[in-house]
Image: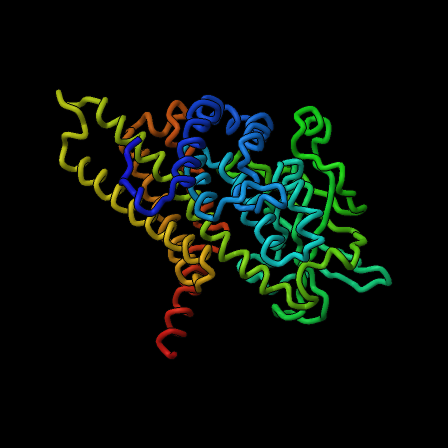
Length: 408
């Protein structure tokens, strides 16, 4: 492990989490990561093992079945998983930041008790239904509709690019409760469906919560074929006359968009952690390879040009880690953090893309083969510049916050 000592930013429980997850990732994930990537197979066994370690409930209070830790502990865990394989890290990260945290921050006491227990234990995996075929960066363009009924709401629409779309059972879904085409009139709902692999879930005792009744008409589409994160389950969600009880409204009617914006602020810190871990893992592999590989009768990292590349990679990673941990601390303490979350996500994701590309370059022709993990890491890095808001959207958010500060 080649890393800058950031112990002063971490407390004992953060360091314990880091060491535990690092050991698990290196012993259990590393040997199978490439196989899962090639087969595009969800890592059911390792996911069940991560549930046993308590990773699906890290920041959830103990009274709701969680580990009672904090956001930074979750960031550290995601970083360590991504250092070995991003498909495993997103399985934990999306569940925590996009499903658990919104319920914890915005749910009623009854909703917390009903949903957080199975989510924290891994009995159910969660996800976030915001993106639509025609509403990506323009999330305010949501077209999924929620019509009032005597008992609640009837939802119709389609979501896409949804992590855990097939394997997941609990989703926070955006739907329009009032006419219009702006962010006003959008509400958030808690929806249940059955996992796409119920027999496998029952066999492992993971991923299926019998206490949550699936909602008729709420299903998932075919698994999407992607450039990277191939062992992560990504699908469409389909809503056809889904009857949703009024008690499943998260927050206030027509005021759901602020829940989604708040969730994205936290999700951007999480995405920065994924990117940070990918970059760290690729850097370590490049540093080792250049120390072992010889050309012209010397190790290739004795060449100044290679040393310059390694220095730049390490510096960018160090800056990304500081920014990510800082943004996490701000959110934990209830401080304003929209700008800092976007900055961390922007810098960490672009660092991941730069570092993994350089890692492939430093491996030479071997880096372009599947014999070495860096090609998978480069493919996995790209989505971090897109998910939770593209790099261009981050720049808009940052500029808006800067101008608001400038103008008082």
